[in-house]
Length: 313
Image: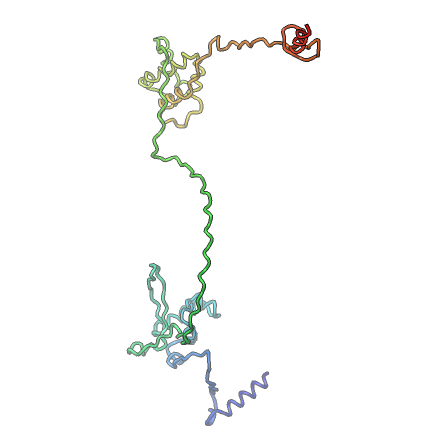
């Protein structure tokens, strides 16, 4: 392969008109038929740009419109690091080859737009610009449209059964009415005094339940209803002081709520506790004639045997 390459190179050199230079580079210029980029010598031989900046400039100029030419994209493509590539891009910006501006898209998003100019000097002098961002499409001969049958109608989807709505309690929904404080059938002075003493004594068993005199006076009928129904004072204290919220913000409301909600039913009387007497059950007897079982207080014959006896008689 090396021999063929050398032979082809020797033949190319013999075709160069004029004497060859004694030293330096010798150009073998073969015209490009495709995949080539025209680069001006003002960039390729720029005396103010580093070799890295010239190379990156030529690379960017050879890329199609829309290619990514940021620091990250170029670092992933070449072996140079981010610092070197960033410095080269700044050189191209300084000499007018590269322009990076902020633009707002139609959806309001801000993006960085990169513009590369192949002739900065001509741009400053007002030279004509040739748009190269989008390649021209080849002109095609008009083609007669072929009638396309209309698409088949899509099947109507069967609506799925909607799940039952979940009822969420609304914060603005009216609250249920508060259960009224129970009242005794007859609030005697003795019953009122016992109920008031029980309520005032609650703070000994639960220091959180400190009731005022007005609270005791208001809640006394409820405690009296408990006492009237035969509830023991210890049972009432246990119902009013067990598992209190900590800390209880409104002790009187807690006592009122429990007196109304936990009210026990009246004690049943003697008549309610007496067992119900059941009617006597007629025993089974065995028929002396056919051994059939039948109900009767006395032994003897069943109904059919008795009927036959009377017919025979």
